[in-house]
Image (cartoon, rainbow, N blue to C red; front, side):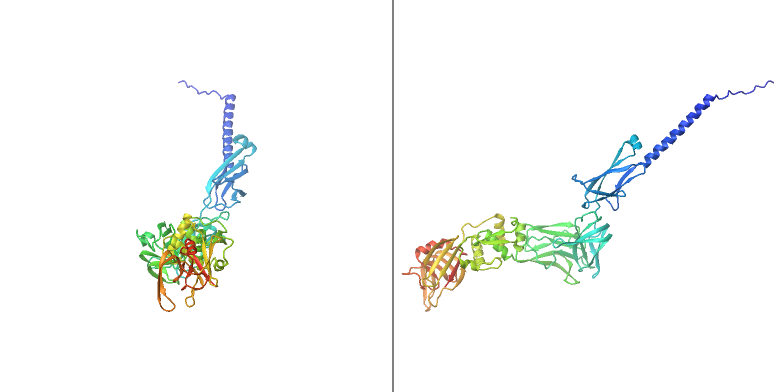
Length: 544
């Protein structure tokens, strides 16, 4: 049997070279790819928020150098920054929650820049951190410190009341809670915080604390029993949600006060007065539909469904300011700052907290008798006369007392810009013989006439008195010094100023000596001339 032998053609050197070159090429390609990956991996730039700074930029070893860092607020305003180890910290304080856009420009190394571009930009939009109070309604055992906690550490706080101002406190280090120290058993405070040293304080948050109690506890602001202005909002904060304490019912105010209740939050009801608010010089009570526990002034609690504040009377100084502005006084008033806005809330507030300013006489030749009676911040007979004239002009009962109704109408007139146009009159009578009566009006002596005052035993009383009744004609009756009765009909141009004493006409053979029973008698022409100038409220001075 014949056997066949196998035979292979040998690989040519040329073929082996091609295979070697191919393998080397693949290896080089792989190495280059790995180098590219490595370069890309080591040339990155990241921009992210930071726990202490506003943001942090990280540049990897082959990433290049930071060329420029810029930050902008929401309105395009540039925020200056400092860069320290990649941390970007504002040089100007930001407001918590403020939106900031950070733009970082990095210049790549020359050889890498040739391949990937010479610059790289990273942009990040973020907000400055905000610290929130974790518990706004706290139960605190009596005598214990009040501690306020936040959802992140804070570096500074301010707390107090909006009325008195908040007190700033810089903390020794970032803290997640702040002690207010021992406080009254119930209370409320406003606290504002800044999470970072480079931030301003945020908007204040009200925190309330209550002692342990089986009944819901209520804190009022302003505090119950205190004095409040007519337009002061009333804040009632409960230890439990309003819906649990009151249901759908709302408190009732007495006396009735224009305004409305709203839920400021789940635990707080706020009454905001409208119009002129609560009446001046009155107690203001709030009646709750269900009883709550309130402090008794010490550490104890009492259960009640009623609390009360005091609305003080209007200031005498502000009364004079309003009467002067309305033309009822012989003086004018000029505020030292901006005038009181002609709005109900502003006028009501000014009634108890008058603005500063100055009074000046309306006329350069004001009688010295009138000047001697004037006091800007003390009520006088000038005040009484002006109030009486205002009451008469306004259709009110004339008593010369600036009660709640008078104040209400004065404030309403101030808001409307209403002003008296009839001018200011003043009468003074000399009892020294020859007796005279002088009428002064708007800086001018209108008339000076002989007059008769009271005889011995019925003298006309010395002093200054406002006219309280103004009649064109009446019948006068009374008792003579000898006990006999008199009744005189048809007496004309009568202005009563002190009891039964009046300015009026009386037929006499002469004038200038004591002849009356206490009145100031005048000739017919003189009495007719002065009568239009002596309405209710006009002051009459009787002097020696």
